[in-house]
Image (cartoon, one colour):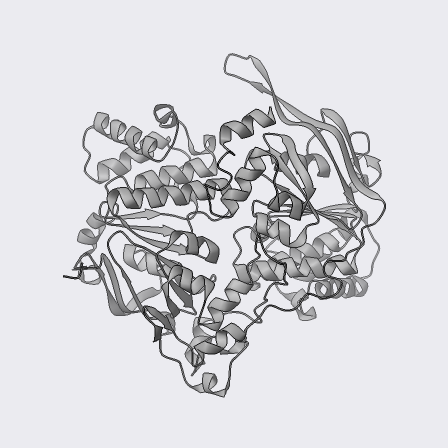
Length: 615
């Protein structure tokens, strides 16, 4: 007898009031104890599936067709109260952003306690005992003390574990994990994934795993559904779809993802953008046609059905056998032969930073955030800095740009001593590209004004027409059309906003560009655009790049050398290929193993070893 699916979504449509569809004919099923991944770019409709299950669709959206069945019960036919009773008890959720999902004004214990009370644990003492059990189960040390802490006192990885503990508190039949590892360090990411898998096995829980990370889906999921423009375009066994995709979109996403091993290639850049719901309504054929490398006339007028091409593997493509003919763009002759300059753009000798902390009794404690850093950055050299949260990457950035004072050693930046030279003299020579393009751009200013904003600080004397032409030239450098100068940031996509950020940083012709997690959390297609753009800009402008990232594959793709930081020290540095193929320090081995999704690799690289070597 076939076991009943825990979740079965049948022919689901979610529509706007205008009739334009966000989701169109989605069919998904998850068996007990299985993990189903839903992959796609932003705007594909991934999160709408979770919102439909939870009955939390945004205002203006509604289910216009189809049904959602959970453990034999039809959710779409239930009353709101009956459905709410299932949520949190039988259906758990792990949201994407722990900092926004948890209330900063309440202690962790208060928030977990309220959740446990909602699912039927009545006594305060029993709730505290259950919370301690859950925290222990998810690997949180000192659980009793953590219950008294507020969210700002815990790291991102710890907060994510709290949410996982809450999601599995009632031993639910189904858990929906919406991008649960986005922007987390690779080691924390691996721990979160291992934890979800462990909880799945312990409680036979099914998981709907929503992500834009193909490699992560291959490691975590049993099956995968690839979503594009609100429709499933490919579905089947996870490793089969990731390693041998039979839809052009799946193949292009794979080729847009940088790798940590194997020969380097240029990344596939998808042209244009995913069609909006309004544009989809007007398209008669395959929605991927405008971006597809192998599209033909049949694709324009005839939508392909989701057909079985092998046992358990379905693809919505007229020519799935042609998918393997899609190849990454060839490397250009000068892609891997950049000639570095002889001059040093930055040199650190014995660099250190210490803070003074006061406890509630007024006692002073010295905390060393950075200790004895020695490194160099040459002209036109791209250097990556990797390490977990708390390793000192952000503190080092603040020292370089002058937001913090140096307490030990010497930092020479573009030929000037950072400790003794006024900060104003560095403004044109050192520029920073921020992680979040949305918050970095003033929504009230037009793009032309934003990219030339640095001119306002030094009174350039340029006429309005000259400044407008400069803005167009800067946008051309980052491959944006000149008519974009009159738009506002909200009229741009995430990738376009990040390009504007880069153009603004290049306005003053800096010698050193600092990029702080600039592709973190971006779709792989947008990430590919930004990384290939940096490679091209390197050929046109003589700037050096300091790339701060938790993604080792990104660092390998564009950097010449890398620095590995652990607890305020550089524990290893050298050429990227040497560091990532033959790491010497125990902590580096641990990072590389986590990035490859293999916690057993370099089994000797335990956390204790890393600490012993660092101190």
